[in-house]
Image (cartoon, rainbow, N blue to C red; front, side, top):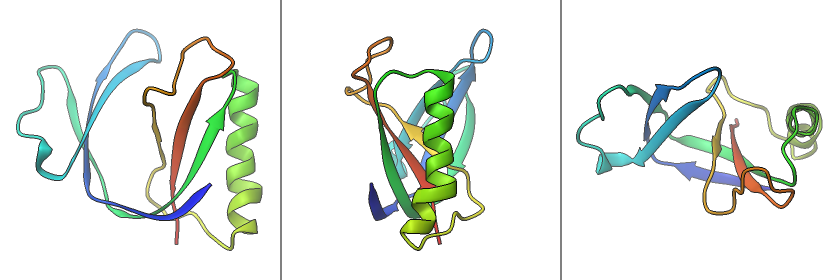
Length: 111
């Protein structure tokens, strides 16, 4: 876990896909100029975040357990409380869909 990261305002655009999936594009600060057609704009506020890295196969049970550990165990152990802002997940080149060796970060806003 990494705590105390400060995130600049992040503009997020998303486009609903089929079923429950969606495509998300995110850019920091002034990197954005125009929202691609079909995407909806959202802004994630800057602030302090605790960052947890999920590693392994993604099953509904394992992801739920990981989130439960974040909110009901690890934040308290680190003396942190979640803020009212939304958490978000960051997927990069470490994420390998369908692989048991996949990784991605979960950013939880904290106070």
